[in-house]
Length: 234
Length: 374
Image 1 (cartoon, rainbow over the protein chains, first blue to last red):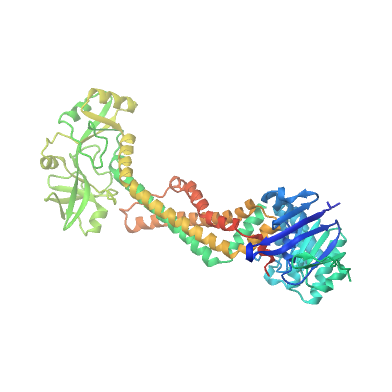
Image 2 (image 1 turned 120 degrees about the horizontal axis):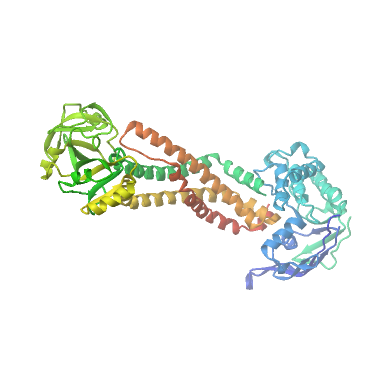
């Protein structure tokens, strides 16, 4: 059974600049992600959603507050340990897909497994299995440039799932997709390979239609989670 | 992750094939420069000892304090040859006079090793005669065929040494090199020119009796004839080559340093440019959990691929150039030997590592938050 994860952000803030130019991108946010939970973070542009996701993904250190993963304070970890934690416990899905242009779809998935130490025949086998689950078995050996936006995002999801992480963080995963493709991608991420397999999923989005798949919808504005903004899923 | 990193690095390089080809050519040319320069020097070292190597003797005598042929002057007393010949264990001893002088051909002067030899000697003269006589008379000279061909000379034509005309009566082979040219004149005539006794010698070539311990014989001769220095062929060759090496070492080292700097720049700029083009991808890899070691290995693989392919291309080119040059100009010997180019491998590894520093620094500064940029 997959190791479950609990992610807790306590009183975290991120401040850029100082004095008159100070900007509080995220301001004293408390957020707890329970194992198996799908959480949507919404809010207007510039509200601090991506900054919050960056800190949840251990890519950005908060100015104040703590981020703990399974009750371990991440501020106590060095860069190498943080990278290891991201590699094994967090899968990322980005708006811009961020696939490696010179590697095929299969190799993009395989790369992440290789980075985590999965080598030999296991990595190619698992990458093909994941791509097949996402309906890309015929496109496995194609370069990203030869794939459509939806296909690229499905490869990105396969890559995010490659090391079987208990937590998926997605930043505007449907932002570059048409509504139909976006819906298909989100169903795969949340209903097919997310909720069914018990992963925690945090999605930052502007797309209100995604509310129906979330367990919890949070509203972020001016860097703060609004007091009455814990919205009921549609 | 080795295979996929290698694949990623390789694909990054091949995405810009022209740039990859140019960088490989740059490294290859730097390596070619190093190998040809050192090959020319090695060839000069070999040419400088042509005379010593081609005489079938195991032991050489020269004036005490002298250990070289190149840029040396040696004078042995008139009776030394007889003394050596009479020494137990010596089968044959032949004295030759030697001086370095210019052979004047029209208005051109060719720096040469001039040997004065007696007629009917068992060794000490031309080792490969292709035409004419190997025993020059009083006003005669034996010179290399390649030299005569270069200047349109033939048997019977004249050249001069120190203004004295000498008729070409013999053509030898393999005695004309870029650093040295070996010619043979009559020993009596040369003695007159040098104002010494015709029985005197600069060097004595000694053939020991069969079964004699050469080193022991040399030691005994050194003790018995203190005014002479006795060296085995290997010692004599090594001493001369060392002198040539020292004379060229500074130039060679300077050229090597220049070539290595070119190599560092070519590899460094290429890999840095390739890294800049892939900064976002390095940021992605960082974000999804690649360690610095894993990121660094992609840079190193790219650098070492360029260096490795460039190096072996340079080695192949050096062999081709050396073969081509000897066809065009037989006097230029470019010696390219495996030990020679293999000796550059550790330095090349160092050069490649240095060239990787800038791209590595760029990678270490990549912000993984680049992944959130649309």
